[in-house]
Length: 309
Image (cartoon, rainbow, N blue to C red; front, side, top):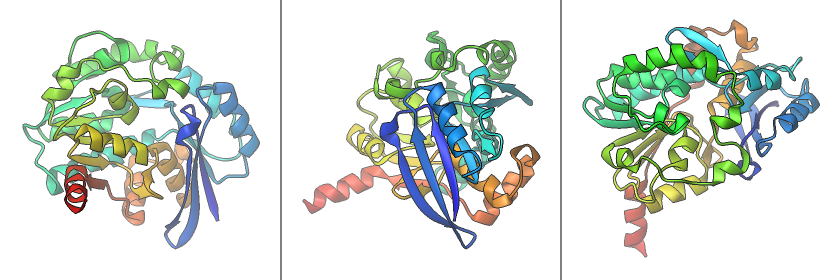
């Protein structure tokens, strides 16, 4: 049985394990949080190196792709260097393929996105999703300056994201990653900010921890397009009045795992090194495995529950 392990800088309270069947073979996928400790992540990877079929790096990006370029985070390089026998991936290959596909799937199968008001909390982290939302004609507010840097300036043109990426990413990727993204216990602290853009939007898209960290308590009728969520996250969404949840990764064992773990699964199935995988290769394996977005109509489920009480 193959084993894929995501070693995450996130909270250990979000740990989970599931066994799935992929192309007729059982695979164990596991997420282990290190509560914000880079040193613990490095030690765990060294301990498991060669004993697992692939690692995912969770809670941190090794690379961000923007404007046809790839930028590496300094802290992530340290973590990735700990794996010398098992392949290690960060999910950026899937973000650049699967998340584009998901946007077009939503547009064709769930709701037309042209003219829909979309708040995307950070575009440079999920450039493929952002580019696809722009391509289908959504009315987007990009929150990169607001949510990553605390600068109260909404970005409304995707071209501006290109310019900012080229100017800022060479510098930002050299900063301590904990300055940019909540890790460990910070993932459990919430500070509503820029809530007028949450209320304005029909669809709220991007990394779930970014979305949740600054969200108001009520999001009635909204659609959330995101990645990793737990049962507790879904219950929060129900209480907040969210209508529909779409995750780019499938439901495994009651939750959706991160793109890093799903990318590790694909690399292990392909039997290839991550650096040998092209976007076309990821597309091929996505089609072969049959990954599909997870959709939950939370408002309908809540109404049905209330009616049965």
